[in-house]
Length: 634
Image (cartoon, rainbow, N blue to C red; front, side, top):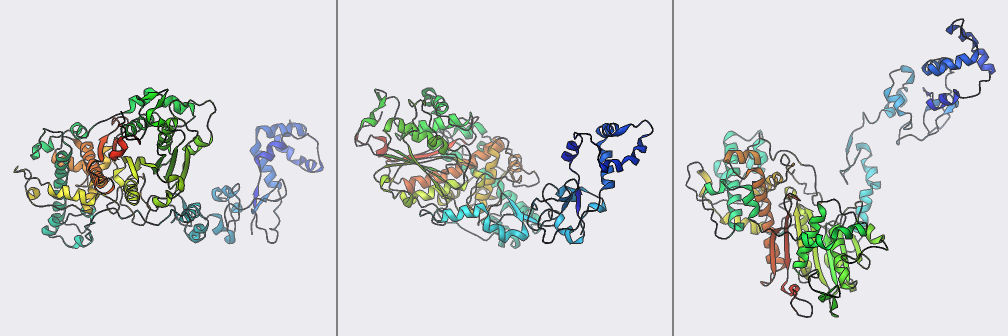
């Protein structure tokens, strides 16, 4: 077996500064002086020359170096021979089954000299990464592993260990919140590949990916394009019929195609309540408590959401004061407040809401943050490290009772979370800021088990492009409104399916969510990929470009161009987002807050230039609009 010889650059540098004392070995090297001519005088000149040409010194030392001895019996360390130290490197191999440490592996991989290459016994172990296949971890695809080590890695994977710990929690009940709400209307789309009759295409929409299938003939492609065009017109028509201001009309296809993106955005009520909170000192309060808000764009969003909580009387009004204390804080029978933040992430929204309530509620505030993954700069740090000189006039972190529930929204059983004694007879408010895709649907579904205990909720929706029809809670409501509204245009440019009954199901929803990606500037070239049924609920993930690919006739760019829609891609994408939120709104209205006196709204809470994902779902019971003593809150 060959061993590798390493000449350390560090050792050469030290040798150059050693005292110039001639040894017996140096005297044996005197015949080499002839290499430098007759003007070469003494060892001082020799070392001086080596200062100018260290590479020549390496050549000389290599030429005089002896062959390394054989490896010691049972040697399990690095196989590199260190000439200066006259021993083998004692570092452990960089991976199991390897023969070289990380410091010396480059000598094997980068060298082309036969003397530096290991023999056949070690060649396979020396270059494993170029020969062994790497695959995403089956537990957590965010990191990669060797395929032949997958079974062993799963046993020690940190994500797998964390998942096992979560499953041992009493509030964990697998898939308790999955399944959405309403009929799936499932049809096996694979059967449509072989059935290319026009009647099949009209009775059941074709999934967009079939357009690129080799089995998709020209007639099927034409039917699919017509289906996508009809769906786009129906989306705009339904959007305007639901959200258009009173007095406006939109009865023809020409009216639909002439809609602008601004008109689609303004069809939803706009209520930015951030200014009173900013004027009250939310920025200064964050700085005083050393809280990392996440950036300049996040503070106005949190401020507006706090304003909406005040408008629902979840938080005390700052206009009614008595010695700087809100009137409701004076009530002796005030119920403790429990705030549950779903998909909390860092937990900044929940931290702000709980601290603002605590500033006037005498410490009767509990915050529960539900989040499946960890993150840096969390609210937990702010709770643990409270500055002594913090300004508590606007928000008071000290005194908030908080806990973090590490669990996926698909598996969290909220009645178990709230079964503690201190959570009985409390005012329960559920909040979420930018809960991605199907995470919103999972959170809404989880509320059904505590429906009678919830006083109010507010959800800022986000990432509609990664929604999932199987988890969507508004299936029945969205299908009803989409199938009820029909385009009866008589224009010759839009014949075919305009006057016939249409259907809405998983394929139509899949196209809607893909078009949603065009709403966000800078992401117009992206679209959501298909969701893996076996995976957890989706989060923000990289998406493909099929949404706006001009070669795909069902992409949002192709549809907008073919129909000559004035609203453009962003207008159509925003209309799709609002229809998805409309189904969620109806779920809240009929399943969580069925009392006719309850208030359920869908509105914009911040300007689109601050955040294009600026819609909120808000709901509260009529009792919340009053103080606990029965008096109206002003």
